[in-house]
Length: 580
Image (cartoon, rainbow, N blue to C red):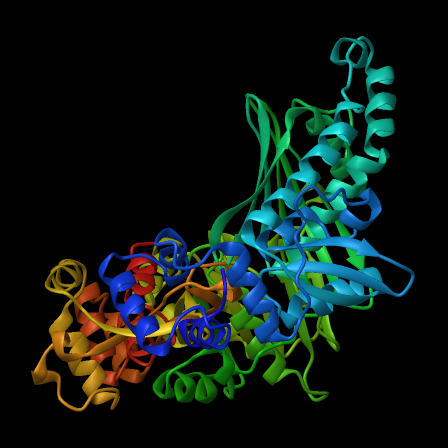
């Protein structure tokens, strides 16, 4: 697909395909028919793909290439991995010792061209082509891969005749070039796309590969079943796991170090009906630690957290489901506290980021090194600040509370739905109400929402149906009052139907999702004297919530609506994560 309507207008007018007047008429007709402009132009035979893209090549001042019936050298084709070629609508079709020729539908996708330059060491020479021509070229990946994988077909009867022979066969397969290439491509592309997880899922007839990007799983590619044994064996060897063990779950890890990135992969393998499923969690060890402002905290939450991390002792708890960014928040706070004047020690599972001057230790249940035993050991290390990866049980909770009471600042996470429910959760773990009231400084509850792509953001008003859906899930009047209090809107009385909200239309930069990147939505509960008194009285959740609101706490839903009104995220995202 070509660029936006403004560029398309300039291309068509410059090439004398349409006049400006006719173009405006066509735009209107396309909108009325609910079709994309480019598609509508071709459908109505006002132009054709070849003429349109040749004109576009002239407009962008790049050469045009038609790949139809062109055979691409295997080494050139494979210099750009298939997932990158498909996602970014491009293909390498020729190369010499200095340059690599790239046919694309978007000659302005500079980020991917820079990636190809770094990967190949060659200078990209950009050509424009048509979608039809590109589709013909991309079919050559499947022909090449299929031919290579057919030569890999493992004789399963022979492989399983003895354990030793099977093990040797699998190791040999794992070293075959096509398997190495597939696995390297999957890992490299996951890093490039900013994926947090890779899922390799065996089916009855094929293998499905999905990436979790911005919290949502996306299909990346489908591989033939013949590749399954080799891919699994390759990843097992990388993670130092037993290649011939297919009946039991296995866990391992490995690292990829290069000048561009340093990523640790946590590997989990579990047997399923159609074979072993692999999930790899990516941890970027070179990731920059954010500031509290970059996390996306509202002014009230920001001030509350800054005030409470300055206290010499007590507990700072971050809560939320798995994958809600709790660890990132804790590391952000640790980074602020990390000075030569204090001794910081952590016990984590796993260590996700390396921090200089912080003594980080990882739990190992196999040898009895748990959060509880690790925390006990840390207390003998003269710490000022302690971070416990997670409070999972009564023993860990008890030691953490006593550490906070005896002059240490303790940071940890819990799995609760919101900030208020953390208080009864600690009581249910056997912690006395007076200890919870006297040791807890602040509780931060959070979720992650996807950010609207800034390249294709557009505004809209909510429909009556949208408003009814919102009212079914949220207290809309209360949210409007919060927006007014936080000076996001001027007058809550005008109603939600008068407000402009935002969403992403979908473009190449965001893979047509309308979203790119993520940000947190938060609620911050400060344990003030009034809140402590309510905890001591074992007050109900309703009473605790009323006091929190009186103190000025903005709930996660309200924070989400503030970010939606400011064009950072969408209403749909706030609704999605609020159901978690």
